[in-house]
Length: 282
Ligand SMILES: O=C(O)[C@H](O)COP(=O)(O)O
Image (cartoon, rainbow, N blue to C red; front, top):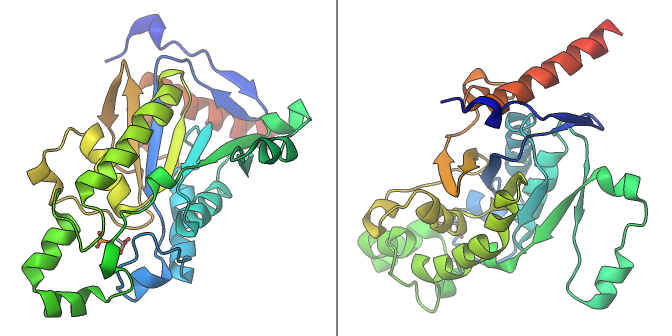
């Protein structure tokens, strides 16, 4: 439903990126691309493993699928597979802004990573690293093969550890425990960005994202059991009036379905097309 002048475009062209009116904002969630332990089917959890070449390709492909969606701030976990995915995806973004990791661990880190040129800062996207978005800590399963563990401990037990809300892998985190840190962080740090009109991308992990999706989609402990996330697939949410509206996964950049979701996005797309046409006719 179009809300008259509330959604009338207030688009401003700034360095070839458009800023939308502040009545709604966008949230993109992506599970990292395939990691070297995903490929080997090993429980990974908080072990810091990089992407495979397939994972690199998935990250680039994810970037292509969201390249025409606005992004003002990016959140990553403390693990390299999330960081590689975010950086690779952003190389595809039409804005061509430079993703810059924010270092505010200490006063010195803050001062030493300061950008002094306002113009250069405007050409960058802040990337915020948060351990709270890490994969669920898989405890004593970390490093073991998932199939072999199912043979050893029983399929049903392993399924419970992997998919249930409250079963806790030996000395590891249940999904519930992972939710407590990931969703608390989401509510305290990410939601305020969305409500201030910022468009956010979060690149995290299967289970930290499952817990965030539980919150966004109001899933019950029974429903979340069936929620599986593929690597490198972007999911889009519209944030409007403190509500999250699930919009599925953009299949391609400029896909009509995505931009028809709201008047604001349709206008955003039209402005991008006009800009391309202007460039062609120059
Ligand atoms: O940590 C892992 O092993 C995976 O990233 C997620 O594993 P799962 O599918 O067993 O939850």
